[in-house]
Length: 183
Image (cartoon, rainbow, N blue to C red; front, side, top):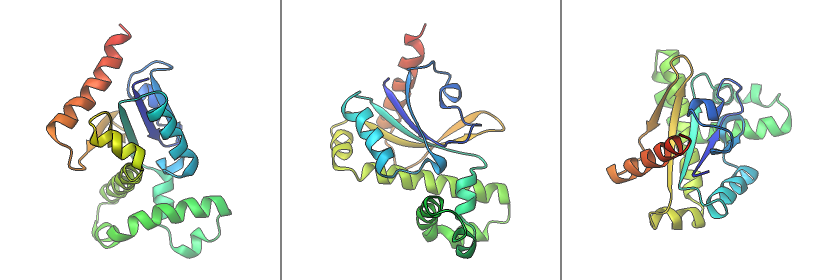
């Protein structure tokens, strides 16, 4: 595969189908809230350093239950099992700087989308903080991007994290070459 996708474990977000790819075309990593922690990071390292993928996509999605749950009061999160509690606290920490902005949004759907986008871009930044990943990005050998999948329409929007036009073009070439190679 030329592309690795860190997506959510939600069954409504089947990565290969979302991107119209066959089995083996995408290195798919799925975990609730598309959270980049140790084992996920190891999977991304494997894809980048051993499979030589050229594009890493962090795919958030509409109605993400993990991101919604991370916005619950701490008292409610404290009632969850330890591993789930830790995951929710990690997402909540990434959302915290934007909570005033999120809470000011009146439209719950828009608020949920914005929270997912914030979480997705936080995971992109987490991936980019890895020295080996950063070296490949700086050398122009790898692109790491965030995206939002709208379940209701099937549309994937790529999120802006200050990508240049050349970076966006490279991302499109990676996904197009995968589609055309399949015939």
